Image 1 (tube, rainbow, N blue to C red):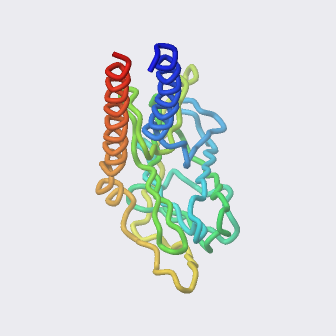
Image 2 (cartoon, rainbow, N blue to C red):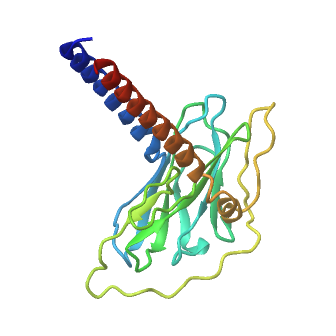
Length: 242
């Protein structure tokens, strides 16, 4: 094998390797945000703020029937009221946040709703851990909160806040939420589907906090195997040229 042929093979091998590593890198990165939140006034201590949420439909078999949200520190369940939601959906306070749901949406339809918060806390960012329950019982967990710039696979909806307006102060807390909500969400999954889970969002979030790390370990192994294959091929080509 002459030198020019060897160099051509090495160039092709290099291009193929770069493409493979790019694919692995994309797979190893965080999933695109499937649950998001925006605010009408994203400032600390802002009052009567509208928070709009979007949960992207991912199931190929059923529509979203319920969302359970763990409220961040500084926002109590009784400080939240429903502003807009899919038809027949209702909001119910839970010990650590709220649940909103009703008749399952059409398959492939994103769940969009908005709430009004009495006042945002004096924080730099707010995470709204969310559990999406589909009509067939499937659950998607968007509960991971990145720290120190790390990447996560199942990020919770995150709202970045600006500094409070000059003179803004915390308002007096309202009455505590009723321990037993009077209007529970009316979930209507498909006839063949099992009933949706009713455990609290925080309990399920805690049990699944480390689930996202497994995907990163698998992807890391794939990348290592690919790198070893490239090194071995390069050594074989150099030996053949010699």
